[in-house]
Image (cartoon, rainbow, N blue to C red):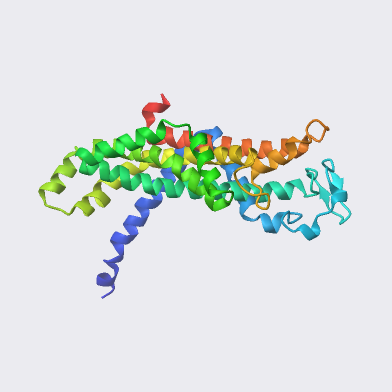
Length: 308
């Protein structure tokens, strides 16, 4: 009885061992690059700070009742009337800059990740369908992609936000509109190669359903390059959102991102209050740089030929 009961768990245990070994091998290969490890550690610190911003921030920058104009433009290291130290100083509204940066990181990450997830989903569906169907549907989609990519992304986003207005959801929609074509082109290129493989021809010969061929055969083999592109596009989306907010047409003043915090301090630069723009600028630089370096390492691991 005990032998019979132990047999079904053996394949499951073996599968989990293989998965653990694959994860361990992936982690060791990723850790072979000190730059990637440091970048990943910095990225985790920034993400944790953004997620737990309400807990670790000295002040809620959105609570107008706790803001005082007397605390406006205090230099870094100044102690406030409440008894805590403004390690990065305050901005023109009297907000603790460290708290504002942590909350701004949260907004920037939400906008960047949300736009990439939605755009990737749209591009994945359209790219797979175009490559698998082919013919006029493929040609029509590629002409649409070429048309969309012929315009500068910031110009398309500016026009859309001018029509939609300011807001987190409007900014996400604008970023999705300028990103989906990258994923559609990438997925289509990978799917065209995989479509000619022997296993796809064998699946068609076995008269498997189109949905099963797409989800079981084409999709898993198209995900690695899309994953790398998506990681890079997160930093691109964050940078584009910061640019739009700096120009005053992105997020509203009540939900400041890093770009809006930089814009708020720009007017005080000539007065010597450099920290109001400099500190959010360094935070944006660290976030984008760490994401790009991690994405570069993932790209080299998934495609060793590029590493050479």
